Length: 389
Image (cartoon, rainbow, N blue to C red; front, top):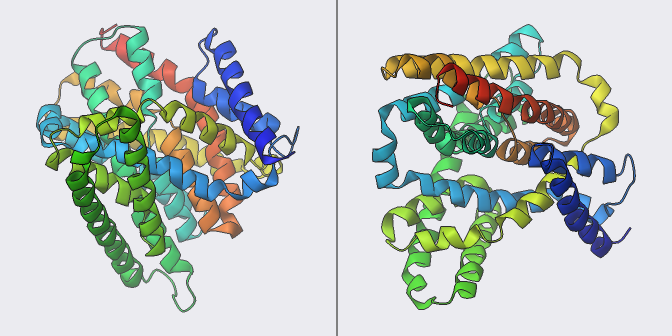
C-alpha cells in the first residue's frame, strides 16, 4: 500500500462512511475512528507505513489549526459576553477532571505519577461538536444551553494549557537524576515552556497582522493563514515549546489586535473538514488492538473519574458563580463527549513517551468511542431535565 493510495482510501471511504452512518445519527467522529481501525495495520492494512510514521507531524499540523481557531474565543468581546459563570465553570470542570483522574490513577491503581499526570491532562478536554450538534438538532434554548455553549467553546483552551503543563512535569519526572516527587525543576520547565510559547505566538501574530494588509483575495488568505500556522508550529518545535499553545496564543493575540481577523478564522472553516476527517481516520489506524485486552482497570477508572471530575467541577463552578439551579445540576452531563483535542494530545503523548504511549493512546481511543456514543444522550437528558428542549 503506497502513500497516494492510502490518501485516496482515507478521504473517499471516510466521506462514504460518514454519509452512511449520518443517516442513523451516528457521530461523525466515531465513524472516522471506526474506519481508521478497520483500515489500520491490525485488520485490513490499507494505510501505508510512511503515513503512520508521520502521525506525530500530522497531529501537530491539525492541532495547530485547531489551537489557532480556539484562540478566537479569547477576544475581549467574547470574554465579556460569556460572563463570570462560564469562566468559573469551564476552569473548574477542566481542573476537576484533571485532578480526579490523576489522583485516582496514582492513589487507587498505583500508577507512576508521570503516567497519571498525562492521563489527567488529556481528561480535561471536551468535544464541543457533539454537544453543539445535539443543541442544534433539538433547537434547545435557555440559560443552560447558553452556558453550555460558552463552556464548550473555551474548554479546550484550558485543556491545552493543563496538558502542556502536565507533559512538561512528566518529562521532568522521567529524566535521570530526578527522584520521588521532586517537582521544582519540572514546574519551572513548564512555566518556561508556556512563557516561550506565548512570546513566539505574540511575535508571529504581530508580524502576521502587519503584513496582512497586502493579502486581499480569498485564496491568498487561506494560504497566508496556513503558512503562518505552520511556521509558528515549526518555530515552537525547534525551540521545544508547545506547538499547540503557541498557535492558541497566536490566535488569541490576533483576534484582539486586528479588527479584520474574522476573515482569517473564516477562511480555515472552508478546509477544516478535510483536516479533521484525515486526522480522526489516522487516529483510529494508530490504535493497537492487541493492547485493548490490557486496558482493564485503567480504562474503567479513566472513564468514570473523568465524568466525576467534569460533573463535580461544573457544579462547584456554578455554585461559586451563583448560576441557576439547572446549570449547577445538569451542565456536567453536557461535558461527557471527548474527541478531537483529546485524541490529538494523546497522539502527541504516544510520540513523546514511546514506552507507555501505546497504552495511553489506546485507552483514549477506546473511551472516546464510548464517550461519543453515550455523550449526545447525556446532553439530551440534561437539556430535557432543564426543560430547554
